[in-house]
Length: 291
Image 1 (cartoon, rainbow, N blue to C red):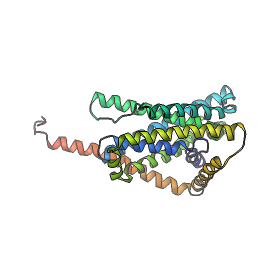
Image 2: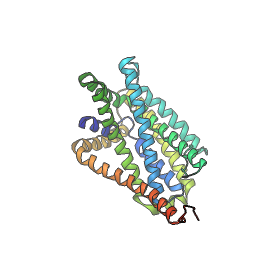
Image 3: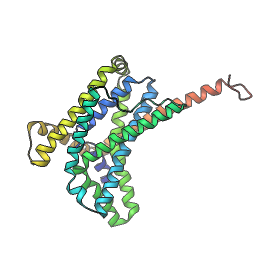
């Protein structure tokens, strides 16, 4: 399970989709900066968004892994073309965002029907990003994921396989969640500045999405189709390898640090609800009616 957890950590920074991680983080920063709310609301939003991305990512791998293992190996053989498909989608989305289109992601407002709808839209939109992240990552990480799941199933049964999939998912989710939470609380004044320039933030996010799509198409042509390299792909791959090596060499320490960050964020976010409950209780009459 430790090996499966390590594979999950590495999956979050795989070379096929490496450029999508900073794009996601910058998009979240823009989302947090342009929406109202206090620090706890921002942390809660970070947990919601990162959990949605992680769920979308893992769901794709489980579904594709099952199909590849028991139905056909075509998906794994032709997975490189997923990079091109997601690249085209990101280019189209980036151009649309530059033209004024906004993704259906908004701030949940607790306690209202509109807030529930907004929260559902946030979950679906960011889970969709997790799906795109996973589809782009398939050619790089599906073989390792299949080994994590089906290798353990063959040796020790489905219980062991599912336990290792959970470990794999936790590794990936910890990286994404900890980075998102850290970004959410890093600099309150920065978020305030972003709220004052929301139009520029949206355009920056659009440019990053467009640039990510163009890079994925470039990577597909240079690396996947022609099995070559270029100064651009070499530089990105070099950075990705350094991060991967650091994760592999210090994965126990990384796991502890990331877990502490995520647990602290959950406790902090839940504190808002406790504060609200205490406020409601203090405003109530002895007979239970609220003033």
